Amino acid sequence: MKENCNLKSALNLLVNKTCWGVVYGNGSGSIIELLIGDKLKRDKPLKNNKLAEDISALCQQSCRYF
Image 1 (cartoon, rainbow, N blue to C red):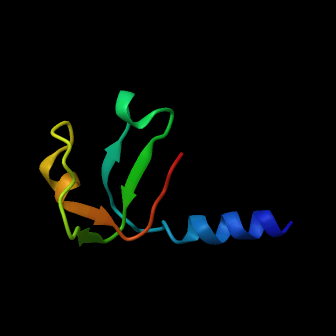
Image 2: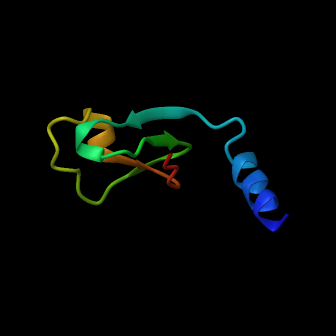
């Protein structure tokens, strides 16, 4: 039962949050990353010319991988 409570708590954190980016495809393996919540400026932009400029320059408040 504890796992269900943790999942519910984690999902409740997503309520009313905006998904502002999705990263998937060959370079990410079998992972889909949803960029949800506040946008935080990265110390150094990612060096990946396949990513959109805002995704390279920003990161999300917390990670959501599926």
